[in-house]
Length: 220
Image: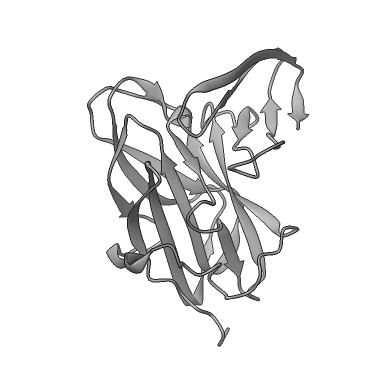
């Protein structure tokens, strides 16, 4: 791990490094999930949003960027299983969009247990809204990547779950994001039900809405 290069996100600008290791990003990298319970945020109230790891794994570093939709305001991060420090977090404004970028590293490695809460996001919504409609992981500022103990890359995906007690019903964030011609969304459904699929452009305006009937199981 001697070639590990951490990014100090307090210095984030247009020339930010490609990734934490300095290596070219591997598009076939394994994936890990950040899980969030898809609650409805109350209007005008500071709310802690726990962000958990999907499966047990050990890492020496991670970097990711949250994109905040208009109407969602960021107030801070509270460390849990990940000992995130202030100088590892940066607020970024770019082309009219707002981002929260994080680069965490621990060269001794950190073991995260399945479903462990890594940190809490502290946010406030202007109006009552599902958190999934307001917060995504974006590759606009940095690639969303984690590095295991051998420095192999794993793509970080954001997954919203409808109920902590029922982890068989969830929708994963689309990837790639942003996208031009096509993107992939994974839906896991406990029972048959209609699902509304909405697509928004970079301005947050709805450009497509369709309802599909989904049977139990995983769909891509």
